Amino acid sequence: MSEKRQFGLGLRRPHYGDFLDGPSAVAVDFVEVISENFLVDGGRPLNVLRRVRERHPVALHGVSMSLGSADGLRDDYLARLRSLADMIEPLFVSDHLSWSRFERFTSHDLLPLPYTREALDVVCGNIHRAQEALGRTMLIENPSSYVSLPGEMAEWEFLEAICARTGCGLLLDVNNIYVSARNHGFDAQAYLSGIPAARVRQIHLAGHSQGRELLIDTHDRAVPDPVWSLYASALERVGPVATMIERDDDIPPLSELLAELEVARAIAQGNLRRAA
Amino acid sequence: MSLAALQRDLRSWLTFEANDAAGRLGEHAAPGLAVYLNNYRGQLMTCLAQSFPAVRAWLGDTAFDGAAATHIERRPPHSWTLDEYAIEFPDTLDTLYPQDPEVAELASLERDLGLAFVARDAAQLTLSDIAHIDWSSAILELAPTFSLLPVTSNVAAIWAAIEGGRTPPTAAILDVPAVIAIWRKGYSPTFRTLDAAEARALFMLTDGRTFGEICAALVHEVGEVDGPPVAGNLLARWITEGMIGSIRSDSVSPPVAGQSPAAPPQ
Image (cartoon, rainbow over all chains, first blue to last red; front, side, top):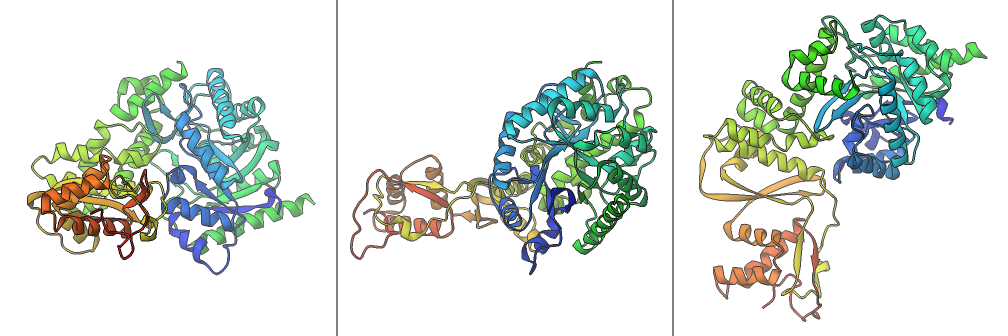
């Protein structure tokens, strides 16, 4: 099957049994794992990942590379990720347009960047270094954000620039576009129009929640209707690309997530029919 | 503002709730900064709660959350892996509960079980692997998952009761301090409390002493008659329980007919 038509789910601990012990492989085209959960020396986590890999292609999705760090990337992190990638031969290796580490501090959260020329130089330098260390092209994901820092370009212009300068691809998180658009008052359709569509290799879908004043990217509920609508628009813009659903909290039975994935398939097939 | 200056300010906001730093991040940034602060603290709280379920059960939710909040305030994370954030929590508990050593010791036990869970795999040594070894010079290398934890309290019984869903015993100081061995059997972390002679022998292993030296120490401790069989029994137990990762020996002795492979040197 073409990489572009693939539909996957995040592999989460409550579903390990479904993926490992079921009589047949779960009906997904690939699974995505959080890379850091498997950057360990040994034990059950790596055993689980190896066994899942025997049944499914695996995408490695990171949260700790900190591509926006002004003081560069960590060699030990890159070396570990390279080892994991060499073992898994992943479908994609991705991380976020954000930062989480500076000097000796690590936030373990995806913190926002100012979209300035200086930040662009930093991020591009870090992506170059990461791709060289990994021996692979990376996908960079647009983040949800809760603070709009003073900048010199829009987020989609920033993404276009890093793709042009580093050759990286994009992981387009449709829920993140929706959340950030609502939080910062920009037009999500304008965002979709501005991204370099040909660079999008994967799409993320997820749910969010309403905070006191802002939408929060919680991944704790089903994909809501406005995000499905935006997904349909995104597919019109970027064409059929690999799509997966992220669920990280209040994780339901696998059957519910597979039903959600069917919605994604139906939307994608509808788009294809319209385009034909 | 440079990117580095911005990142220092956000760090100051997250770690110290520094209002001057927050002010430099924009006049309309307050609601969003509150979200990032909540996410930062929540992520670390979740990490500690998931890493120390027995400590949480022992202290109760309110006291545990208070201790976790203190840890987060005193020790901002510095490693890219959240697993490492759990490592220093026993130190914080030790300062918060100086009169209740079982609290920090219970945390140390949970921490070491967690470290064993993801430690490097090693081939399981079998009794057949130990034929033809010159025991006087043999060095037994412990499994990568193995560690020793000295304790002064009945923490092993407390952990076992909590894990088993039973009412834990009252905390008590042991008559004699003990040592707990922690390692992984297959993919499951495990532990057991050692008697004094076995603990001393295993500490000698961790110091790189030969099995011959351990045998000599046991002979000195329990006598020439009992020392060799005690050493042999310990060796067999360590191997069958998966504590030993490999054995290094510079020279090889031919097998002796009728002698058990696990028998120590005479």
